[in-house]
Length: 356
Image (tube, rainbow, N blue to C red):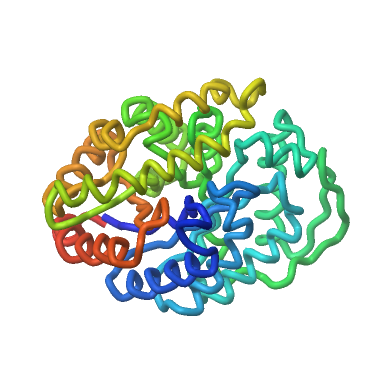
């Protein structure tokens, strides 16, 4: 079983500076590389304390690649709707070369109305832009010269430079949260999926994961090659009491900045984002106690976290936890404690059993 880290900035400048946050991320990545973690993932968001410190995950992952030797870098995710896909294809290929073939390319549709408003992109176009963008990027990576006549992009006789190291191209991941169509599309196209259990709970996610695996199988892709990565807040301490007390204020900060970012959903509707109008209330209602009770966060002593992972595994099947360990302005001492305790007392319980 593999374990990764997910760096999703969710703090106020009263908690830390952006520069200090990046310094912490890079030090955590260096140590994670030594400890045997499998992946590092970062996000693309704008304008809010929720994610907005990393408008370009490729930049941060380039710094990670320069300071590590084996850990894989994952864009989790870049947004084709907000980027020219030709430029994005080149930048991702550049990162694949800088990391010597350690890039996993994750793509998402975005879901915060304010971001679409500022970029002048209609939310009802997001899926079509997403699918066209990935098609263009994949073709530029794998074909010597590409001409394209799409809905949003038209170009003739383009040769991408640089070329990615990995052949035929870096692994592709799709961020899928609530839209059934995203899970079906990922499965049909042979892509891996990145999921967010706390957004809807493990039971609804179980159904979506099965939809994904069914689409993968029906498309004729090799069974067992599909991969699922789940974003989970993680806070490990020597005792349950210490873990829950430390987790509470930092998760509350996370919910605070998340709720602020989705306020732009008030009064908004989009056929392509069914149910998202309820996000404001759903996010605001999240509490530390709820996510722990619902098994959508890993919080407790190492022994308890082992049990929590096994619980999620029984529902979702094989998956890779992608853990947020420095959310809400968490200090070095706490973040490194989680990193070290998890590596020494949690990971061996799974890696020694023969699971990947």
